[in-house]
Image (tube, rainbow, N blue to C red):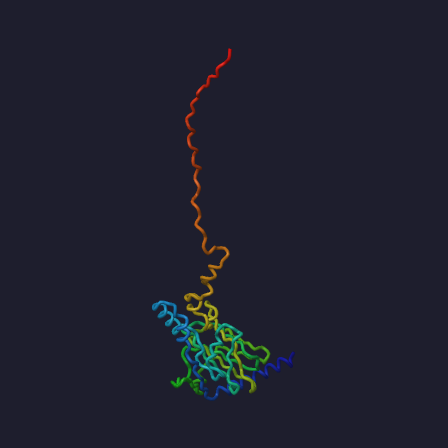
Length: 274
């Protein structure tokens, strides 16, 4: 037991030293291309102009999205980290020894818990909740984090993975911020690319704040919503006939019989023989 505890302590110390060493140099993050406009165009084509305008403003102002990553085999897929589907994932470049991701919550929110699901690897993970973006936006689709900026950052929590977990989470006092940043610092370089399946940020009252595929345009407003029955489904329902014949009027009392004709008795006299 002491041997296991000692080994874990050594691994933790190694990972923390590795993290501080990696973060001691400048880091340049790449901006994730904005896809909201295309998504809005696809989801609002059947809406009125007023509803479309409201939808666009909602997506631009309040929808969470992956904002910056340190690398990626396909940066366009960065939002797979926050789509609330563990089956989808984002892959950093194989040469990235210090994966970093910054996520925009869309607006200032209160966060009390952060978690991540990723490919198992011996690594430390630093979690941050930030009021403003760190570093300097170059204006060319990148964000540079220098040593001074990095030194000022204070993580809300750090998790250590010995390489067998593939998931980590930290709980901390409720903290308000608009941006969430995660930094992985692997214990050793690997030739295989690092993959992140899901990142979650939990609010004390609203649950998971990160799920880029959750917005009112896809769950409440559009005609394709699964919550609204399709016209074909309604027509095919066995409980409701398609063309039900009109019900006949309620029957009243039967008509009375005609009055009998008048009856006159005419006696007939039969002659009798003598």
